Amino acid sequence: MLNVLFSARDGLWGVYEEPLRKAFASRNLSINLQPDFSDPEMVHYIVYGPTGPLQDFTPYSNAKAVLNLWAGVERLVKNPTLNIPLTRMVDTGLQEGMVEYVTAHVLRHHLDTDRQVLNQNGVWDVVIPPLARDRTVAVLGLGALGEACARQLATLNFNVLGWSRRQKEIHGVSCFCGEDGLRDVLSKSDIVVLLLPLTDGTANILNADTLALLPKGAAIVNPGRGALIDDDALLAALGSGHVGAATLDVFRQEPLPAEHPYWHNPKVTVTPHIASETRPETASEIIADNIHRNENGEPMRFLVDRSAGY
Ligand SMILES: NC(=O)c1ccc[n+]([C@@H]2O[C@H](COP(=O)([O-])OP(=O)(O)OC[C@H]3O[C@@H](n4cnc5c(N)ncnc54)[C@H](OP(=O)(O)O)[C@@H]3O)[C@@H](O)[C@H]2O)c1
Image (cartoon, rainbow, N blue to C red; front, side, top):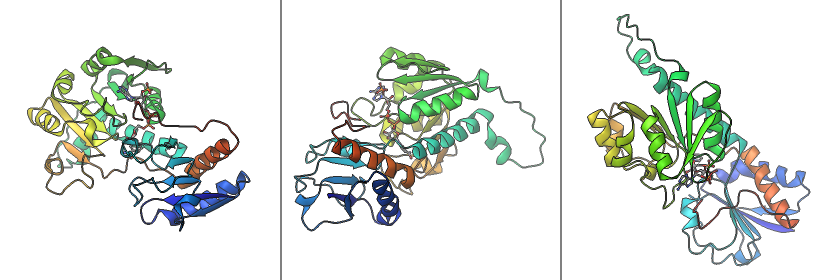
């Protein structure tokens, strides 16, 4: 019998308990799943939500792995009390949701949909938008989420440029890496989508220098992490008109404080970290599969590389 602790913010236990039990049962795993154990030393695996109460892993001295419910692990990789294997979430539901969010906001900027939606003022204002084939979209980060978005945008005929740490090959996407690659990509892109993890290598990747590389009027879509962008630099670029619009889903501080200038800037759309959510049914399958693998001596999937930070 394996003891599995479910530790996440209030409300999630009720959502995850049944799908997790079902996924464990379908693999014939004998599991005692609980939101609390009186003795932390009894715990073998921790299914984990970073915004829950558990921050000190020291008492869980017999735990074999932490299975994160989120794709982002920036809070966990710097936790000095966590020194057992850590997996991040790669979930088909999470991918589908992100593809829908990114496609919707890229199309909105591409077609300038706001022009019609927000201006029903009796003026027959004919402006024909370009075709997707004439629009260049950058996807920074070509992991589980970025690659899925880049592929979808390519099927819509956008000229898609992708950028990652290591060189990738993706059908229909021109792939770049390295600092020169980033400069190349940004200098050509009308719309930039950020799907990088937050690490020491990606913090403030959009700053005054890199924003200046963009063609005038470019749009930013950031469902990655807030600290990928230097906020003051973005606000200045929006103010000067160099950046035309931004759709921001993630912020340095969440919830975004009511007085933050992003809320009041007409060129900025704030969405409250809803770009995509882990889906309990599909995510529970991933977690059960990883415990099953580990118990059978097979490597777990989606292990976090602590040295790379993601
Ligand atoms: N807003 C939301 O609702 C929401 C939901 C889920 C996730 N997210 C965010 O989305 C992020 C991406 O998720 P994912 O599952 O796609 O992550 P992932 O699979 O780990 O992919 C990360 C990608 O970023 C690239 N990368 C990392 N460091 C880099 C660097 N220094 N320079 C260039 N490229 C770099 C990686 O390059 P390689 O391919 O070379 O490794 C990889 O392509 C998460 O970390 C999280 O912050 C947001």
